Length: 140
Image (cartoon, rainbow, N blue to C red):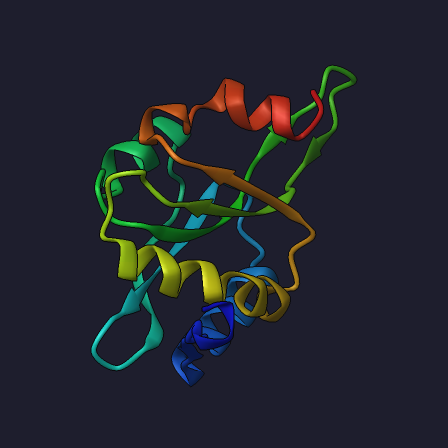
């Protein structure tokens, strides 16, 4: 069965948005949220958020549909430094449609490579997407 997993096409719009997002100059927490278009079997832009808190991001995501989240997180360090780690978050709720879960899972690695993001995390429950969770993943 694994040979039949469809990897969704990453559209030119998404590739351009990923590049733009990666090299953005803003000094805030921002997110690029991507989703799968089931009919076209493409990864498309769902929403872009500038200057958003993790809690607000959580509230803006659908609770029962998977999403890919590219997150530029403004991290304040104890020594006064500020960094902006780029994270790839794969959100796949347990109760989402099985076919959709397979399409997302089959596309995850190619999208992560296209985004050129090394920090990749997965969550199954939207409530888990918190600042504490992210900081624990980033090793703080």
